[in-house]
Length: 142
Image (cartoon, rainbow, N blue to C red; front, side):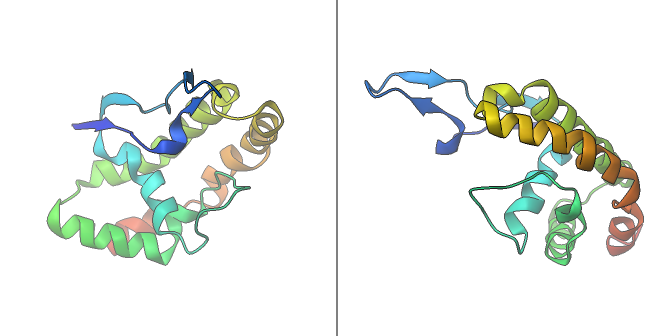
């Protein structure tokens, strides 16, 4: 289990009077399986980098840089095969929860609608067409 508090400054907003305005990120406070944050790790180590206009494509989970991160992580904190297999569902949960269910709370209306459309047109279908869990299993010698 992982205890996680996300204090990233981008996860909240304040008014001109310096009053708290919007809610914290979806993972503000939770106890969860450690692989729940691996999609975010994959985005952090991605060669794409941070952008003003972004998407939540599945490809960062397959990038060489993320695979290298996983190999090193696995040396220090060994993963179980079932945790690795869970990554596919973690990504699906993230899209369903963060983009589809609650996206309107995190993003401006125009941007949340864009991400919502992409969720149905790109993100969810890509789970079965672009995500190969065997690539990760092989790198970790499972």
